[in-house]
Length: 110
Image 1 (tube, rainbow, N blue to C red):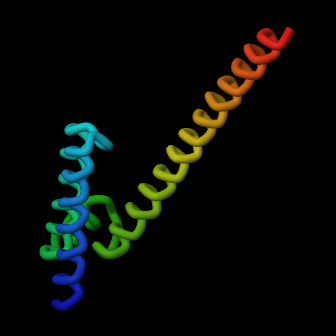
Image 2 (cartoon, rainbow, N blue to C red; image 1 turned 120 degrees about the vertical axis):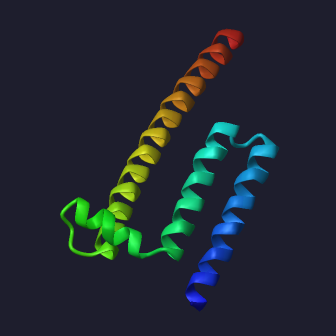
């Protein structure tokens, strides 16, 4: 029970931080809604753990905890992959920008 309250406080903090970031313009409102659904979904699963077992049985997995673990691993892998793609895209844009600036400076110095 203590674990549920602690995690609930953390989820509430994540929810509040999400909407603070929306107000600051860091996140778009649509992204704020998506993250809010994630936080409230996690809270629902935290307080109603038997629902994970129902979903697990539907997918042919024995226990709800296993379903949560498998899902977490998949989402984390997807998240890391997306971050790696984003970093690669930023590196390419930065390289292109530095090349353009170097060429412009070279032309000015000539």
